[in-house]
Length: 298
Image 1 (cartoon, rainbow, N blue to C red):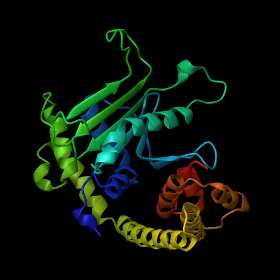
Image 2: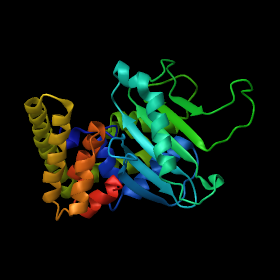
Image 3: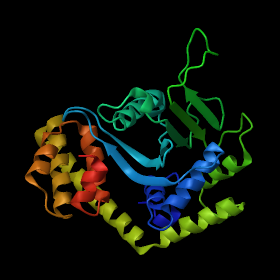
């Protein structure tokens, strides 16, 4: 188990704890976004661990690491990613496609025109090179294959940031930020902005509530994963693993408050294993049943 004080901003728990912190969250999120995009960002609403459920109990859901909603502006999703396995890297473009589709579906109200759909920027921060060209910045937008110069703006942008990339003359401020995110030490905070960020990170690591949440999340996750694996072995099939996770989710939620019959039924109806894993993460991190419902978008 990695100690909280040894964590870096590419670790899910720390970046979620920082961006959702009641004192520092919005300010830290704004600084990170402004470094990445090179422009000013308006007032932000931070929704850590935003979960979009599948359209039906069998459909795949998705959990966004750091979901940021700019007032009268764009929607952002920041995904630190250290999983550089071959299969994970090859699936990145389709993973991003799925993320965009879920975010769009969750932000167009019934009856609204398509031209009201807001711009969405998904940002992956990786400690591995996702495309093998040693670039720090890979910006992906849809285009016309036959006429690459043809204007085609659908409001969807994906940015991959490779922390060690050198090609393409990346801005110095961005290089410093990514170096700091991969190794969040005082020595890697040479600018005024990064020193302020490092102070926030240090305060978050020393926050007693954050430390307690980390210990509890680790203990509960280990326990419920063991339950799921045991159930799967007992049943000898995927349904058993899913049932084990379902029981684990409900067990955790009962420690957070009263679980209504409607919520119980909704969770019991979900059969997709990946969706159940994401719901488990929401249950572990939520402080109450109502917070779980908001995080899980149920």
